[in-house]
Image (cartoon, rainbow, N blue to C red):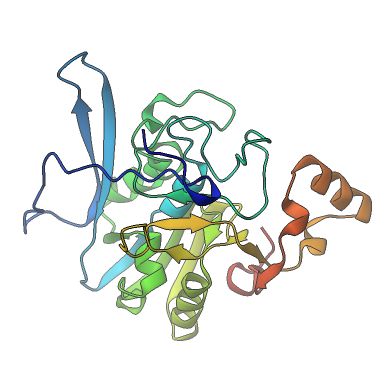
Length: 259
């Protein structure tokens, strides 16, 4: 296991054991491999997204920044663990890295298919499966693609936010909003969407877009509670949340309503 770094960062700098060159005939999609240990037969998935740059009807954004935020690997090391408040911390100053395997998802129930595959099977696979079965023209992207603009959002007729899409960077928000303003449609089949503002930081070796941290909020926190009492109860329940400031516009500016 990697050493604990600044802001509780656990970053694996393992040497690659194998490489996969994506064949040119593979279509855009979410791909899952199965890893099996030779020594004891232990198994885990490994997940990756194949992107293309062709014009398409639907651009399916996988919510992998949120998968990362909730990834506890190697045990208790998500954005919701500050070393004191286990699975309840909602403040800043905790960093998590993409350079780790995905551990079990801990949303209050056992979800064995999440081991190594983030939240894809939990929240996103049903819609992807249905769209593929029905023959819709779909291309798949990562939140990093939305952040950098490499996804080429305006090549699509419609952008899809799917599943549990909680963690967005400001460039993600602005890129989608700009594409919508220029005629792209957007549909939000997701919950808790655009709650927290994140940066995409470089790894300790300088590789870009490998680390996120909870930096602030989209929209004013006061609007998310029906009464001042309800807001106070929420802040008491989730340590650190009171330290988060509004850094982005209201998600309603993009979605049409607060999340």
